[in-house]
Structure formats: C-alpha cells, structure tokens
Image (cartoon, rainbow, N blue to C red):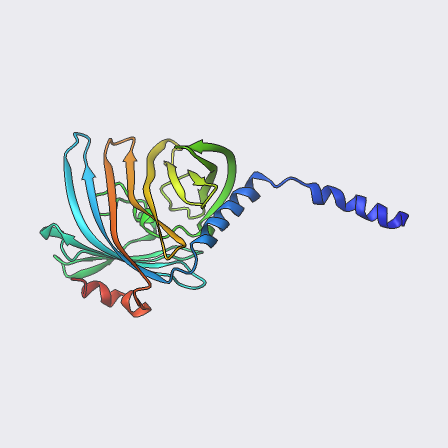
Length: 258
C-alpha cells in the first residue's frame, strides 16, 4: 500500500501539470479543424469589391469550387466571370498539410498557365488585399500556435491565439486569431508583416450554417492598414456535396474555365 501511494504521488505532478499556451493554442486549432471536416465539396459564387485609399471601388465576380482531400489539404478553383477584361482568369490551388502549396494561374489573354512560385505566395491575388497564401485552405500543420488569452469580441466569448507560419516564404511573421468558444469559428485575424508590423486585418460577418454542421460567412473584409486599401468578399449560392471530383481540379481544367 505504501509503495502504491508513493507511485501515485510521483505521478501527481504530471497529472496536475498545466496545459502550456502552445499546447492549448494547438488544441484550439485542431478542434476548429475537426468541426469543419467531412464537407466533401462545395461550389459558391463570390463578388470581390476592391477599394483604394481614395474610396473608389471596382467589382469582380467569380465562381469558387473546393474539394476536400483526405490526408492532405483542400483543392480549390476560382474562375472570374466579370469584368470582361479578366473573364476566364482562373486560379487552381492544391493546399498541402506539409510543404509548399501548389498554385497555377490561367491567363486567357496569353492562353497559358503560369505556376505561382513558392517564394511569391505573399503577392496580391488579382490586385486584392488577399495574398495567394490567404486563398489556400488554412491547414493546422501550416503553423505553430500559442494561446494568448480569452476575451469577448463583439459580444462573443473568444479564444485569442497566435499562430506562426512554418513556411519561410510566408509574408507574415505571425497572425493573431479570434475564434469563438461556442462554435470554433474565426471572427478576426490581425496579420503582421515580415517586420512584425501590423499589415492587415480580416473580419468575418454573417455566418450561416449548412448541412446542420458547416459554418460559412456571408462576407470577409480585409483592411490593409499600411496602404489604406481594402477588399470585401461577398459569398452566395453555396452548394455543398455537388458531386465534384479530383478530375475537376487539374491544370487542364484551368484552360477549360469559362
């Protein structure tokens, strides 16, 4: 009995050891990812509204489709329909849990596919405030994490975590993310550039639930604090489990984009 008590007391410090901020941050990220698993595929429409420092706006319309890949990151295809001068421009993205993502841009005016170099992922996507790396699905393995604090954001109790890109070519040193504690949805991200200055803030608005499980926002608004420019993404017409296949996401599908 005495020996058993000694063993139990020896184990007690490990049992009672507090979860580190790094462990808690990773656990939150994993839970958010787990809750979005199993959607299969979806198609949606998007309006992209660009605004310059003077407040002048221009609009673009495009179609988005995505395919969930078991054991790896998602595949996605973005096809521009308007305005006429960029109609048919398409971006194909293969996100990977580890290693660099693969991205190809089809330019109809040149009738050729351009591969986006891994060291250019921080560049702006089609003149927007979203970088190419922002367009890719945000896999858990792409970052290391740290839980900073819990706080209320717009009336919702949230976890505030910091995540640090693993990719040395990322345009960010760190990102501060607000995730609600009820549904594990992101509501805000502050992006810090390579000099660790605040570069951009992304906010989500108007979440809706699909298939009684999957949450998607009606709007995503990215404000660039350094340039004064912004981009608003307005999502609509979500269709989940539309029967998309891997064959719908390859380089040949880019040049077929209409």
